[in-house]
Amino acid sequence: MESITAADSITASEARGVVQLALQPASAAVSEMIDKENHILLPMCLDTLTEDDWHEIAKQSLEFGFCLYDPPDTWRPQQHG
Image (cartoon, rainbow, N blue to C red):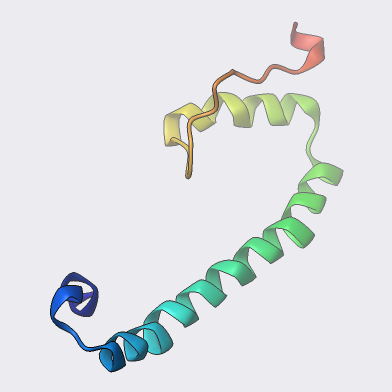
């Protein structure tokens, strides 16, 4: 993290080193996690959870917050109106 905060005082070679040693592995790990979520976790959840389960998850999500954005609308299952 020091290397990133000192970005204005490092050389291009040092910056490449930071990218290779820290940023590329972190990016690969995040990409792998997203791939597993999309191809394993979400399909399993869609097969397992009921609409009521999803509604409960949606209600509790406000408690934990959202990763990248706050949804503009509150989702409600059709049966709940």
